[in-house]
Amino acid sequence: MKNIAEIAARLQGYDPEALHAAQVTAFLEQLVQPVQECETVELHAALGRVLASDVVSPISVPPHDNSAMDGYAFAGGQLQAGQALRLRVVGAPAFAGAAWRGAVAAGECVRIMTGAIMPDGLDTVVPQELAQAEGEFIRIAPDVLRAGDNRRFAGEDLMRGAVALAAGEPISPAALGLLASLGLPRVSVRRRLRVAVFSTGDEILRLGDAPREGAVYDSNRYTLLGLLTRLGVELVDLGVVPDEPTRLRAAFASAAAQADAVITSGGVSVGEADHTRSMMRELGDVAFWRIAMRPGRPMAVGRIARDKLWTKLASSAYPISAISSQYNSNNLTGEAILFGLPGNPVAVMVAFLAFVRPALLHMMGSTRAAPPLLRARSAGSIRKKPGRTEYQRGRVCMGADGQLEVRVTGNQGSGVLSSMVQANGLIVLPHDSGDVAAGDAVEVMVFDGVM
Image 1 (cartoon, rainbow, N blue to C red):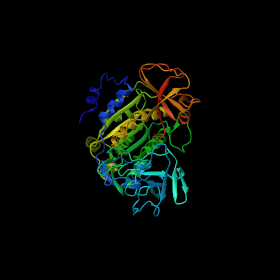
Image 2 (cartoon, helix red, strand yellow):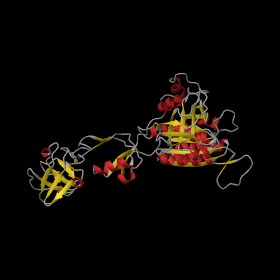
Image 3 (tube, rainbow, N blue to C red):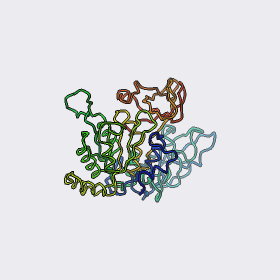
Image 4 (cartoon, one colour):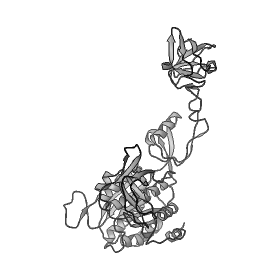
């Protein structure tokens, strides 16, 4: 397994003091690996899980040719261009769920309901609103129908033996319906990713603490918990950890013993008066970056090898009994991936959405890790310096001409959460781009389904 330095060496132009956003993404793609453990879950509990293997359809859907409309079934070859068609209605109606028995001759039709099996020899359905009743006959006006209209073919949705859903697909509500249509009560999925979260710093207040000068309440952890809950991971919330070596060592050790990934906020900037950076170095293989982006520049990424961690803890003054049961009960081997995010609230969210979320999705085994982007025109001018990727808070709406447009929301400071609340996406301005003029097309990372 390659260490952090070996992975970095593969990146062209790698400079930890001025890393491009694209390089961060490329680095993380090489660093993280999907969890291998799988489990079988009931279909009603599978929403949001990631398929462990291809689902092969055991049946054809639909199993028979059937009607797409309530109306009358007949042989479509009787239709003639420019001519009306008069047909006699014969037999009892054909209902969904039961095969219709009987013969239908030329000049005859059968009343049929949506989903009913098409009787032998019939291939067309005229909707009831296009059929004029004339006693025991119906009349179809000229040129309102073509042969074969309103018939669903057997296997039109899925043929038996075809791949219905591919491994790595996140199970959506539509996918749940598709699996149910195949009669599958259970499905094989990757196990849930375990993610541990804590905030660091002596200046961080827990909710309910009395305000004090120079201190701030812990908003970052609640933001991250919300983002991770939307992602569907198994959460390990370790709260707020003071900037004290023994407590930090215990937090990192406990997190790595329990989780596949560890996310912290604060303590990764150069020159900060805390011990987080040194503790990360002590316990793991970690790179500290200054990314050419706004908001948020500092970020730490690495791995904590559990076997090495165990050895270090066993030889230190820290009592390991507190995490022994966690380590054994979760049966985790290998390593925990570490993400050290900046301390400013919006910078935490941007770094998570741009880098951490795609990496976690890859660890979950998902093939849909890239954040969704849409194009919209800018409603106003946006100042942008070349040489960094910018993520500006924006709100997408429909313009007066029916085209999508996006405008910047409020103060773009990295500590201003109110403008993030007003936004429904991030305007992504690429590394080499400059100022944006009103009317220019920009890309937006939409929040819907992400936040």
